[in-house]
Length: 151
Image 1 (cartoon, one colour):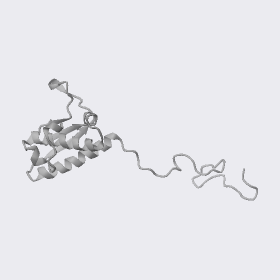
Image 2: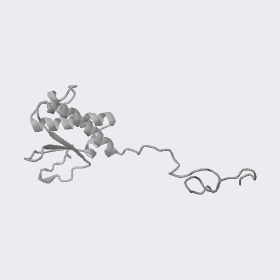
Image 3: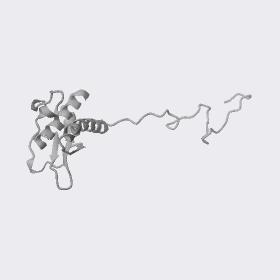
Image 4: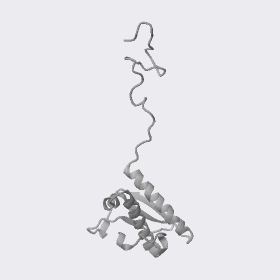
């Protein structure tokens, strides 16, 4: 209870009642914290960054590719094998450019950590671009560390 000489307001500025004199409580009183980023968001950012690197190399040749990320391959079709694909390439049509789809869960499963995840995404996307446009991996890789043995 408040002392007799110090009146305590019963309501705060927002019109909420301060019953026990402890001030604002609850989620509205907490400091603004950036929302937690999900694994999907982090993976999307990695794919976007690697795609930008590859696009710089493809623009000089006049080639266009769209990149996408999915959690898992949903339709393996008749070409299913015991191995789960890390990415899939959809051929270009008259109205749409070729599309490379990276699958998050299989790639994350094979990666041992965040640094390995970035390297694996880079290797998978470079491999798909290389196969799609018949460009040697060495021309796509500026560091010389991509190869078929990385997949």
